[in-house]
Length: 180
Image 1 (cartoon, helix red, strand yellow):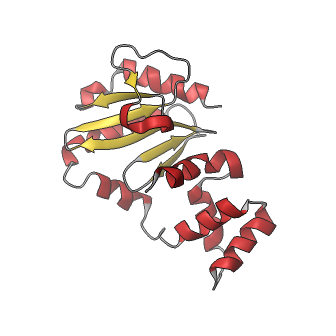
Image 2 (cartoon, helix red, strand yellow):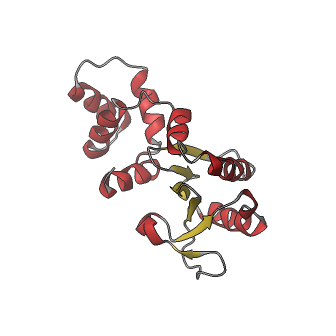
């Protein structure tokens, strides 16, 4: 997925009030034979701008893959690091019921009102945890964002389940708190 499209998807909850998955579910409740009719529906009935409506409709056509299948595909050949992912998700769910977990083809976005974390199996032996912590200086295991670019401000590299320790959970919690 190109960066512009990924940025649009990441900004969707803030700009439209709903995540891509939420919009796809809304489209599934209707029956549109033509792309333009679905775009028009989102624009007129939900006040979505043309650019977002067109993107939502286009991506909804590829949405037959379940969230679980997306995660399974991400960790195919990387099964040894999937417990790290599961521990991260379990810890984040404890922050509150206002978290949306949005798997994509190569990563999982974690959103409150805004995306505050991104979990990506970077290699067969490492997960990169991207965090949005504006104004926080890198320190200890908290590095500059690296490959995440502007999507996240920081990154923590995780190679073992024990790497998801109190420090990592504290950084996640701070990112969650800053995402309101």
